Amino acid sequence: VFAPCVEVDVGASSVKARSEVEAVDRVSQGHITKASVDAIEAHNFAFDGVFGPQATQQEVFEKVGHPVLKGCLQGLNGTILAYGQTGTGKTYSLQHRGQGSDQAGLLPRLVASLYVHVAQ
Figure 1: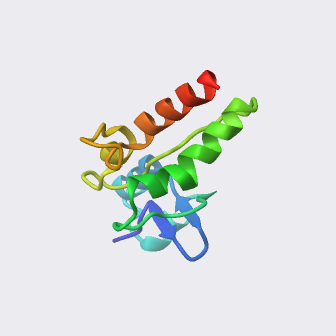
Figure 2: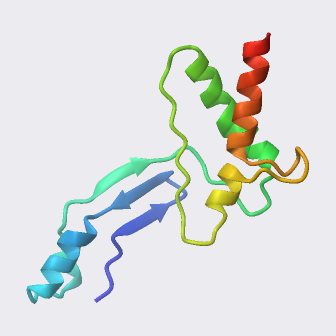
Figure 3: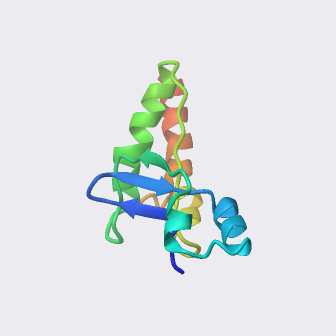
């Protein structure tokens, strides 16, 4: 029986997530139908966008990092969440220092932008 605990709908900009623990419990109790797993209450999470493999570090910073930083400097709380399979580049995109400014990840760019803002 295959019933995914996470379903991504890029067209609707949402992710539907079911409790994997509850799904495992139902299967281990002998409820091994797709309908029994589908019956687990799903929580929908909206997302603002997805970056493809051709996206540059600069593009990610301009569309995600800079607006969040501006909001934080105005007193808002800000969170940037990178979600995806192992090995897809989340750590690289967030933390990579790079050999040049064009390769720097989101966090080094945010720190640099914060220093520039404070210095002004």
